[in-house]
Image (cartoon, rainbow, N blue to C red; front, side, top):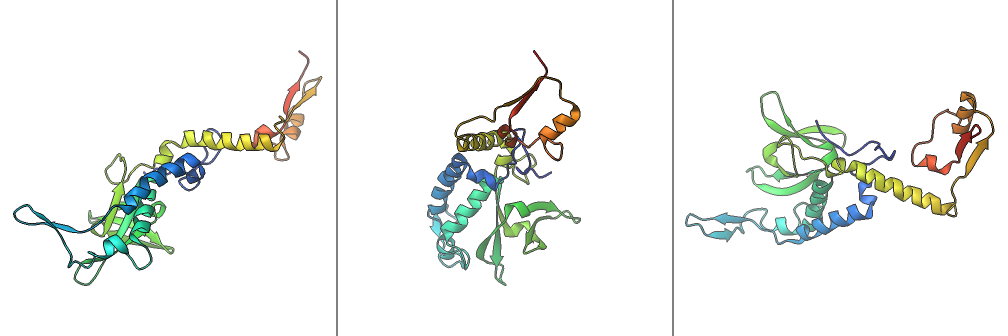
Length: 229
């Protein structure tokens, strides 16, 4: 089962890997980790029979890997993008483009919310993704997968999903504080009634649909008290 961060939290605020980046601390942490990784020198190396390691210069990706791994992205852009995916979704995927000789000639990022490893009928492992509305199965040997902590060794856990309750609280406090100060730092007040309110009266105070407002919206309305002490 794939774990994603989307959906409401106990604070009444929806949290996902997309809106998590609007929390300054999340954005700063992702940026702080992904930036250095995206600028590390990168090359292809081969170990010889005597154990020595030499840089490979004749491979098709020798120059492209550290400069422009595909026709549209710099090496920094690709690495920072995929590392950001891994830090939010727990999974970062890059498809390996190959020539007719089977040599790698390019790397392309795959969207983590549309990509997952799948074991198919003949017990092969493929990476299933959706590109421009089309579902495609890619052999796992043609995909580089950066994965965080995992329960099954195939799919990483979404860090946002694991911390969604804490992030939901942060979003709720941020929204409550913003609306509180937008209201000149005044509470909604209280409505006092000397008698006991009927269920119909309670429904009228709640709203036209008879349902309480979703948090933290409900903090904007006045409190209610009925009956004598």
